[in-house]
Amino acid sequence: MINTKGLDASFTGGAVVPVDWFRRRYAEGFRIYSQCLWTGGYAGNDGIRAVAPGNLRNALDGGMRITGYANASPPTWWPTDRCMREIRANAGAMWPELQVVKVDVEIPLTTFERTSELSDALLAEGKNQRIEVLYTARWFWVGHMGNAKDLRWRRWKVWNAYYDFNPDVDFGSAPYGPWTIDDLIGEQYQGTTRLDSVDVDLNVFDLEKLFPIVNPAPPPTPKEVDMPFLIHNAAGTYWEMCPGGFKKAIVYPALQAYAEAKIQGFPPVTDVKLPDTLINQIPDLPADLPAPVATVDAAAIAKAVNDELARRQKE
Image: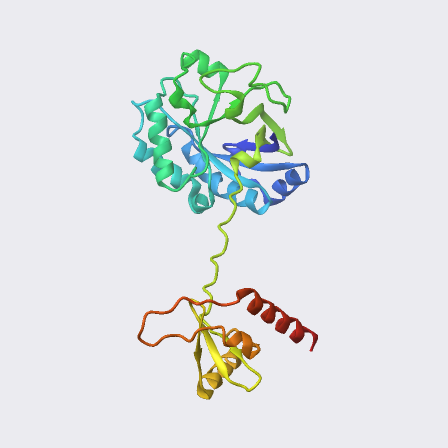
């Protein structure tokens, strides 16, 4: 649902925004901060580099989820590898912290191919692994992109700029391009706004889509320790139960080893006393000959095991 308040900014007046500022915005309900990392060229790039790492660090420390955004540019401008070098440098030490770096399409003559190149480069850097986002606006898409409806553009979810000063969702009433309302990730509903001496844009986002919660893989099932299942009779004779439903007589040293294993922290050996009438039904494990088919009253043995466990619980 698109109802999480967010902020985005570029130059922030040439100064890093203090962490207390972000904490105050958090108290007002803002949860996402997006920082410009590349304007598409070198005009103002030094200004971005001066503030971007600090703004991202302080936003994160102030409780915000952080993202970056970078402009795609026309094919006659800087090559993509150079753009990526500047984007990384502008993010500085915060580059590893960014899961999402949105692609901004608002420079005339930007093409699908150039947008894809930048997005591919970001993917190769480990960004946008769960979602890819494109920032644009209806006025730009219709006026400069010919209202392109190529379905390949649906690779990206849309962060839509629609300045009506209302944190609602307007894309459904003013759609463009190949996208539908289901492709919307957020709306920038108010441009440059001065909040507590800092110039920012105001947004609402779908937090769950932007930062999808991935259920962690269940922990691996621990390998069971291959400990035998023992049975014994009233006379104190012990057998080890073997795969296939056979029994094998064991001697005192083996029993002693099982007891020592328990002391050393291994799971205790299950040891159940059974009547001779049941034990005699269990065939002995053959030494060399093919194993006979075991014909055992499994229900009777299971009942005896359960009765024995119940008795132990009462002790």
